[in-house]
Image (cartoon, rainbow, N blue to C red; front, side, top):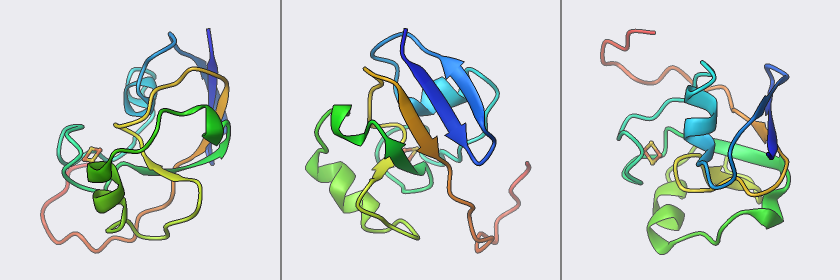
Length: 106
Ligand code: FES
């Protein structure tokens, strides 16, 4: 089973191959924002894949468009709900600026 290490928490989890990164996190009580529920319609699940980036499935045009909206975009940025784990990964969950003015209950 591939392992995913989530930073900055430094927590490593085993996940079944083919699991999307967002589910790998949520199933292990690791928080990644996902305002659209994993439907590639927001950019809140933006993560930076520090290791294993090349093993991920190709980015769709929709993902590219949504990622453009993400804050702190890097060459290794992906939407956590759109990429599947096939090999060991190291994934950085960026800190969000608190620009949301709705009543987020964390
Ligand atoms: S949760 Fe909205 S795009 Fe991933």
